[in-house]
Length: 114
Length: 114
Image (cartoon, each protein chain N blue to C red):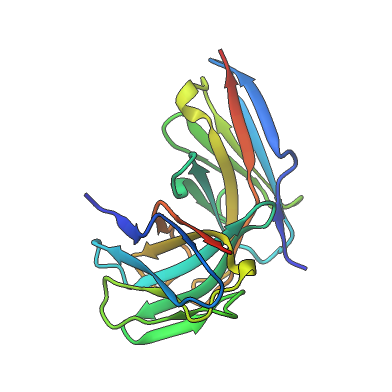
């Protein structure tokens, strides 16, 4: 089954404790991205990657890092999480680099930073 | 600034009736539009898309209408069913570059009355 898988689905942690949210897709997609979803704000892009070893900042990249060492994986790293990073996070992928096609989303990771 | 918004945050519809969810966008250069459905605890799921060279596109029980003159997009769901309960949001992008900005609306929650 074609899917985007995120782990963990839920995490409660404390300020400053490094964490990584993993994302994996089995569709051989070139493009992957991370979003955060906050009430009333819609999805906002954090980082995206057009292919292996190619990453770029989205609209809200501060406090986040990503890597793309393999085509299928695109982890999101919070080196020193802070409470304003409490949010619902989604990983997404699409087949090509072009933006004129839909993305496939994972089921989300709810992060709470205390 | 750029925005993609929705006229109503919630919509309640009688089961079996048709639903119409509206979306306004501000960028007249937007040329690709998507509707997503997000069920509770899940990631956004692609429903239907439309390019700016069209004004109507139909899928299974869904129709998207695009009015470029007034920068308005709507999603029509025929014979609404309980399984249609979800948050629906639109997104638009401009151009075909992977760096093209994709703007997501904040969503309309559709609830179905029995």
